[in-house]
Image (cartoon, rainbow, N blue to C red; front, side, top):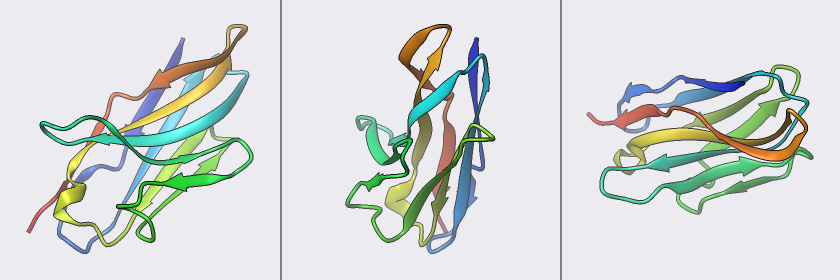
Length: 120
């Protein structure tokens, strides 16, 4: 059984910062891909940022220069540092990872989501 626990969401004023964390637990042999996605009301879920096991990162154009993704493999945790937040960043943020667990390679897991609201 693998669980992802997200934290760090909340209400912040425009221009502010938040740091999201997503910690994985359970019978995990290794973690490959890790990413953050978001879904705003009435919109489809979209990629925000992702990071490979080798440390290569990728960002949505809308967050480049403002957000930074990182990972700590020893802690099985992925982070999303969000700076200069805008009202359009308001959404539920989900972490996503692919891990080798129970002999299954590259199995996909999703977190439960954490709300980020940017408003004055």
